[in-house]
Amino acid sequence: MSANTLSISFVIPVYRSEHALEGVLAEIAELKNIDWEVILVNDNSPDNVDAVIRKLIKRYPKQITYLQVRKNCGQQAAIINGFRYVTKDYIATIDDDGQNPPKEVLSMMTVMLDHDYDVVYGVFKIKKHSVFRNLLSTLNRFVSPVTINNKNRIPMSNVRLLKKSIVDSISQTSSSNNYIDGLIFSLTDHVGFTYVEHRTRVTGTSSYNLIKLNTLWINHMIGYSNIFIKLMTALSFAISVVAFLAGVMYFIITINNETRPTGWLSTYLTLTFLFSFTFLLLAIISEYVSRIYTSTNQNKTQLLTTIYQHT
Image (cartoon, rainbow, N blue to C red):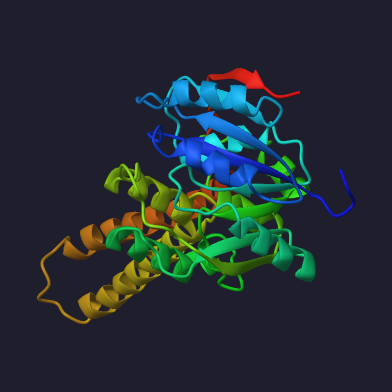
């Protein structure tokens, strides 16, 4: 391998792509001055993609690692599973449907080396996704400074180029609700982007349905931030203060108004006190939950089989 050769691992989650995956691998193989490998993670795809992958292994026996997840775990978890098997200096994530030209990784590499970024996103010039998915992407970018500490509002996509040090850290996570972009921004602020081509899907439809997009959105919003717990804490404390002040106010009104029914004041003040005290306790509990939540998450592992690993 020459000094000018780049060393890149392509991590590709595979699901319902039996008619497109072969073309993606062919484009990777055509890249010049690249020492490449591909980690294919079959996310329990129901089509005939397993046979396609086994045929590709015979064609590229020294470049392919094939992993098979025994139960569908989603794109994010599939990619992280693939991260555990990379061996090259740089890691690229692209889709299996042919919409992300592998050659665009080279322009992303130029940006990374010029600016010493740890991660570079390939942002689509013209998105070929559904209107709803594009809307969620825009909303994600808008709230990401708060939810995942994306201070510079870097636009994100599923096309990424990462240094191996970042990938090694991400691969150690064991949460079942992982969000790769959240993990990235929890590790580094040295993140950039460049515009890349996004092709129209030739065959099939996206596996990201409304339910999966909503799940990903929830992971973005609450997986790596305690902002909602903080808001609940503030709201609970505010309600307790308002309830207390209301009790004081009605106490003053009642002692100056002899026509109030007997026992009404004591009942109201008792309920007001309990109401305010309950919300104050909720605020305190929320703060404890917030600290626990940001340091840990649910543990869950996938049953993963290494079908083939290149040597």
